[in-house]
Amino acid sequence: MKLLRTYSFLILLLTAFVARAEWFPEMQRKGNFFGGWGWNRSMYTNSDIHFQGDDYNFTLLNVQAKDRQTQFEAKTYFGLKTLTIPQTNMKLGYFINDHIAITAGFDHMKYVMVQNQSVSFEGSIDDKTYMDMVVNDAVKLTPQFLTFEHTDGLNYLLSEIEFYQGIYSGSFMDISAYGAFGVGALMPKSNVKLMGYPRNDAYHFAGFGTNVKCGAEVLLCNHFYVRGEAKCGYINMPGIVTRSESISDRASQQFGFAAIDFMIGFNITPRKKQVNPLENTSPTAG
Image (cartoon, rainbow, N blue to C red; front, side, top):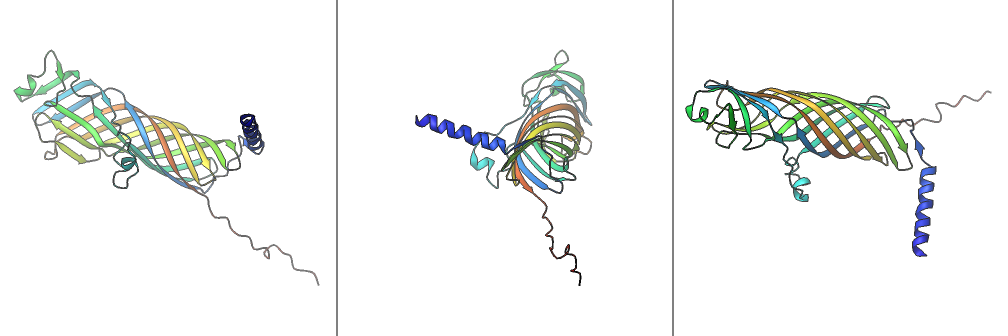
């Protein structure tokens, strides 16, 4: 009986909540400023990676890669000194009208070449020790031959234009769907150790990217939000630094990516002007 009363109360509460709600409402977001922090899980298409230096010029074909998800620990994911260790996202945005926002953001993804895979090889290496590792136009990517990662990370600095549609509006919760298009620059910190050369690990401008995405936002009390979104895009990096002491040594690659992002954040509404009641008062006729 108690369970039935509880269930009936919840049904009545839900009915009251829905009765006060509006489906597909007109949004009122113009002038809102928002920002957030989140986490991502990403995946990558295979890619050809070209390496060029004074004593080598070769391409590795159809190279596999994956992301590197940091194991969840509260002190790592939420610690002030460790916030950027996991794969993270950051965003700031502004609504230019009720349905369109412009944003600037930072996607900190991680790209890790799968070690010990065998790939096709095209080109030449002057050093016989490493050229002998190529057998029947294929090479095994052992740590001795190559380690190749963008794990500090594959940093995508992007600007997006987001388009919103209100889905649901209640007394303390609003739900919106959105889609977006973005472009940006790639500033990876690439960890590369190639054929016995010293490991390189330095931030550098390597190329550009573009992306599209769609998602849903739950806005709470008009001040806090949670978001989930699916994103896919294209990355082209023609200038990956492989040796810090060399001016000419570079790698290049292009690939597609897909990501699932989750974000929490804040929303600030513009302060409404206070109307002076005396301004609209007509003078009393004498």
